[in-house]
Every structure is written in C-alpha cells, then in structure tokens.
Length: 523
Image 1: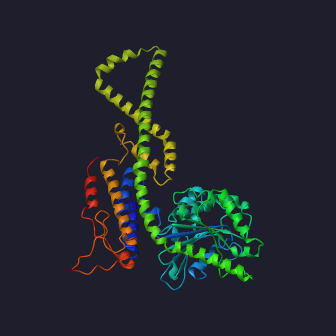
Image 2: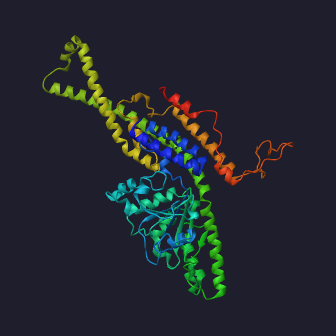
Image 3: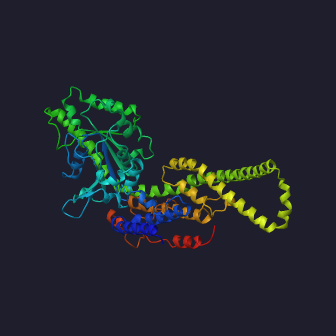
C-alpha cells in the first residue's frame, strides 16, 4: 500500500472512531465513501492521496457571513452565551474563526494549521485553494484562519464559523475563495446586514455576492438573510422605511421569496424610550431570534442528510456526467489519433518520394533490397510506425486537455476529468478499446451498491427522526402499521437518545468481499 493510500486510510479510520461515539449511523456512510474512493482512484477521477470523504465536513456547520460591523460577533456571543468573540463598532477581526466545543475548561485559540491539516474539520486543505489563486498565500494560512474552543454546551455537536467583514471591493481573491468554500460546506448560512446603513444600494457588490449568487443554488434553503441592529431604526421617524429599503434592495437582486429576519442583540441594544415602540421591537426580535436559533439547533439533522446527499450526488455525477464526458473525450481522441497517424505517414511518404525524385533517385530501386531482407525491413517499419503512432496519440491527447478542463469545471471541479483522461490515454492503454481506464462492469456494480447502501442509510435516518404510524411501531406502507401481540405488552416507543446510539445490524451480503474479489479479474 502506498504512503498516500495509507494516509487516507488512517484519516478515515480516525473519522470512523469519532463517529462511533458521536453518530454511529454515519459510520456506514464512511464505508460507502471508501467504496466511492476506489472508483475514483481506478478511473483517475480522484487523486491517490485524496478521498471524497475529506471534501465535506462531518460536523454540523453554521457559517455567519456579512458586512463589516454587521454585528456578527455580537450575534454569536449572544447565541453561545459567553463573550468568545471580540465585538465593536469597527472591524475587530480579519480572520475566519472556527468555534467548536471542547472538554477542557480553559479556552484555546489555535492557529489555522489546526484546521488546514485535519480532515474532520471544515477548511481542510484550504491552503491549496488559496495557493492556486494567490501564489505564496497558502503558506500564510495562519493569517486567514484560527480556531477557538469553549466548554459552552450550546456548541456541543456543531461548529460555527465567524467570518471577517465582507466587502467585495476590498477583499483579496483568496479571502473570497475561502468564503465560497465555506458556503459550499455549510449546513446553514446566516447572512447579516447592518441596519445602521440605510442605503443598501451603495453596497451593490456585497449584495450581489451574498444574495444574487446564492438564491439560485440548489441548496438555497440553507440561507437566512438577517437585518441586524434594527434597534437603531427606532430613532427614525419611520422605522418601517429602513426595513422596506433593504427589502427592495433584496428584491432587485432576485430575493422575492423566503423570510427576511430583523433582529438586534438584547445585550447591546440602543435604549428605546417609547414603551409601546420598545415592546413592538422586542416582540419582533424575540420571534425572529427564536426561529433562527431553532434552525441552528436542528443543524445536526440537516448535516446527516447533507452527507448522505453528497454521497448520492457524487455517485450520480460519476456515472451520469463524468463518464459520458470522458467517453466523448475518448471518442474524439481516437479519431484525432487516427487522422494524425494517416496524415503524418502520408506526409512522410510524400516527403521521401519528393526528396528522392529531387536528387534523381527512384524509390522503386530499393524494392529488391527490401525483398531480400524483408524481416529486417518489416521490423524497421513497425518500429517507425509505432514511434509515429505514440507521438500522435500524445499530440491528440494534448489538443483535448482544454476541453477536459472545461468539462471538469462544469462538474464544479470535484471530479478530475483531466486526470481521468490522462490516465485513459497513457502509453500502455490500447487505443482500440476506447473505454476509460478503470471503467467496466465491476465498477458500475460498485456504484450501484453504493447507491443501494445510500438508500438504506437514508431509511435509517428516517427511522430515527420520523414515526409515520405515530405509535412507535414498525410501519409497513402496504399492510398498515404493525400491531403489538395481544399476549405481550406493546413495545416501548423508541426515544431520541436510544435512536442516536443504536447501531443497525450488518447486512448479510458483504459488498466489500464481493467487489474486492471481482476486482481481481480483468474487465
């Protein structure tokens, strides 16, 4: 086993150990990711030192984004119940801060490398993405990230990311890359705006990035748009107009549906003298805060389904998008290679004939010599044609790398079509097969098993969080809910705690054994 594969195996083993304590149901998801990795490695869609499981965060993740001084840190401190983040009227922190629970009483502030090197946390290997857009910045990961720990029970089982103030005009490309990466990983995204700036039109670029670029995402439901520090509007003659101005700005960028929350921190509120006005503001604040906190508290459930959805999505992307694109690239490569072979050989023959005639030499004069030593002549011809052929193979492959990169970008860059194409066109591959490397009946069966296992995991999650019969009994949609035997007392309804720690019985069919045995055969 290579060092890279051993390293990935060790990381996944550590992840399974953690999940055995935190959420045993997701251990099966890790096993399915291992199977998916084998497909990626065999086809070249995934680097040998990489795993699909490390491209998602296994902790429930909430990100808090927003403009400078939008009250992000104050909001987080209020939710957690302690002053873990510095806050103020001016920007006080220019790093992405990951907040998580710790058993140790003393809080810790850890450097960015703690996040960049641990696959269990979000932002794993983010330094590589930063380096790709800003040379040299990947080494300065501690300037972009930090992690803080606390014993606050509110954070147990979830992770919150507090972002530096967002200003699309002023931020460096690397910071925007981290922001987009966090949005993709998050189970819940809170986008905060500052009600003290009543002219949202002046923040056009910020609104475009945080609103226009997010509302059409397939996971748009995880975004909550929040107008913070609305208590300052109580001093206005018409506080409703402040909210209306922001709503119009959101509508101009396409946000015409969904909730638009208005809140402020009770601890940092501006005194409102009018008792009736104060009661109205507090009532609206408490209602909206309650809904936001409820979504934050339920993020663990959304995380479990997100992980399973990612598994299903990747399996489908490989079979339904990546492979058809790769097959099309292979078809074009095959045709271009044959054309280049024919053109090159024809050109060399014409060149030889032309040069021969130019110097007064008749090419037919060498026919007797060839006939007299045809074995040597055939060997020379084969060697020459082989050299030409492999040269044209490589040339044809290089002409299609641009198309491979575009196809890879269309898949959000999660599947390495360029690597898969290069692996499928390497020298030892037989060109007449025109089949991508590692792609065959056994690979398709492996993907099918992954999808079937994925459905089983979803059913397990549904059993934990739902009870269609309402009686805590086994439910059969065909024969109706099962009734308890008359001679025995009805079974106790499953509690949430027992459901969380119950480990399902293993399947009788051993998918790993079957596929590992099958892989030994040549496709």
